[in-house]
Image 1 (cartoon, rainbow, N blue to C red):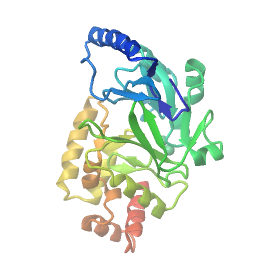
Image 2 (spheres, rainbow, N blue to C red):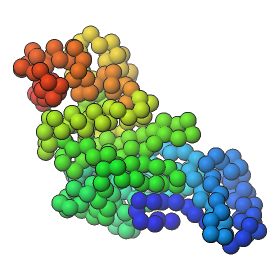
Image 3 (cartoon, rainbow, N blue to C red):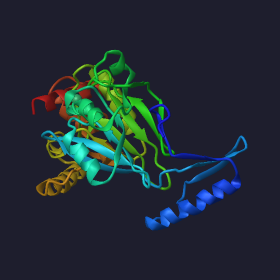
Image 4 (tube, helix red, strand yellow):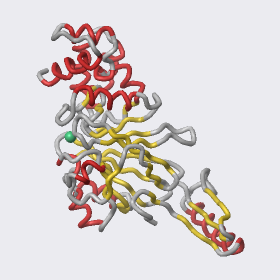
Amino acid sequence: MLDDGLTLESRYTFASRAAFEAYERDHAARLRAEGLALFPSGVAFTRTTGEFVFAERARSVDITPVALLSDNYAYVMTFAPHREAIVVDPSEEGPVTAFLRSKGLTLAAIWCTHHHFDHVGGVTALKKVWGEVPVLGSAYDLANERIEGQTHGLEDGERIEVFGRVFSVMNVPGHTLGAIAYVGEGSDAGAGNVFTGDTLFLGGCGRVFEGTMSMMRASLSRLAALPSETRVWVGHEYTAKNLEFALHVEPTNSEVSERLERVRALRASVTPTVPGTIGEERATNPFLRSEAAAVRAFAETREKASSADEVFGAVRGAKDTY
Ligand code: ZN
Ligand code: FE
């Protein structure tokens, strides 16, 4: 059931305990039939206003990259045992629909990180196939009508809840002024997830098109402050090229060279390099390391750079022409 685009849940209300218990028996049978544990952790059963309310919370959050265009990723996010999926940044409709159908999923909502065509190009076509699903993006992009078909404009800190799993919106301007990240909190000993669009890439960051260097560095710093085990899902498969540049900036950083080797091995078999983790990014991404001595030294070989923003700007400038 879709309440308002910001909450997706499967909620059952019963008039009496007997009615609930009858449902519970059927539900148990269905779970057994699907080979699932009986009453998986997180199922909530609360008594409110004299009725029994049973909200079925997702056991897990699973994310699958779908490769689109030349090097873009859309992400299909699922919430077992539910069959409704959310897609993040669909630049094309066809491969997303094919993936959903192959898994027996339906599309419940579209989340966009920013208005660029290679992130939203499939929105209108997906709505034609799947109906009027909510399309989330930033309040800025809604106000400026930059995403065709957008239905919700999100503010910084806004909360989205999907089958009991909570996400929050983080404004990350710089690549564009309306760029946002979707941050899913970790739970049940699982790591959190973040969809960063073209703000943070693995080993790199997006070009600063609409914002300032200082704005972009602040956005990246907010992302870097997430828990280190947070999984990072980015807009493009640029990881190998980014790490080559990272090694150019910090030739003696062994974590960079080791990561580059792992990434090259993955790409040799066309395996996506996502997800990374925030911890890996802090250790290897030169755009999160403006305070590291080696990065500062590299910046100073190019231009006079004393503040962290100037170091960031010098490194970003070097990447633009690398
Ligand atoms: Zn972009
Ligand atoms: Fe992009």
